[in-house]
Image 1 (cartoon, rainbow, N blue to C red):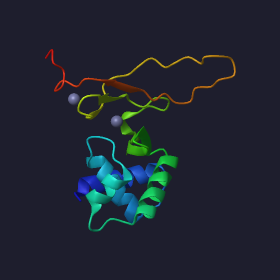
Image 2 (spheres, helix red, strand yellow):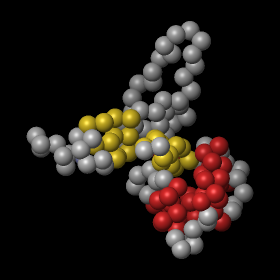
Image 3 (cartoon, helix red, strand yellow):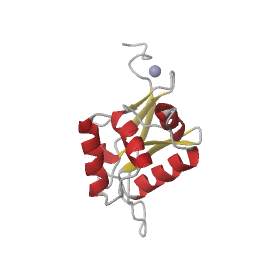
Image 4 (cartoon, protein in one colour):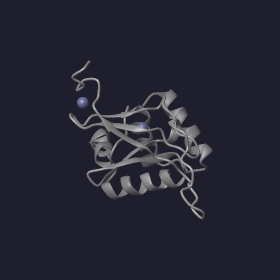
Length: 143
Ligand SMILES: [Zn+2]
Ligand SMILES: [Zn+2]
């Protein structure tokens, strides 16, 4: 791991007042280097052969989510995909685009959507998470 990455991880953990543990550092390292949200399985593959066991990976992810450092980006095939919360605001995660033809997924970090208004009295919207579907440039026949 590069010293620059280590420094960023230390800053993240420090800002969330989380203790620096091996699994936290390793998982944040994977997410920092990832270009798209990762499942616990993908993180394990990435850290092999030194990967912590599955239970530890799940628990560590949950602690990072609880601290607000990591977000559950979306659920696909009943599996959560995790990513760093760095491209999100307090109330809104950036949208994710899934190609219905090839299944490719992209983080639309440059895109921000107006926040939905509460539908009825009594509802409070705490977080907006948008998933978009369609054709990616590779699969778009009109390109
Ligand atoms: Zn596609
Ligand atoms: Zn994303």
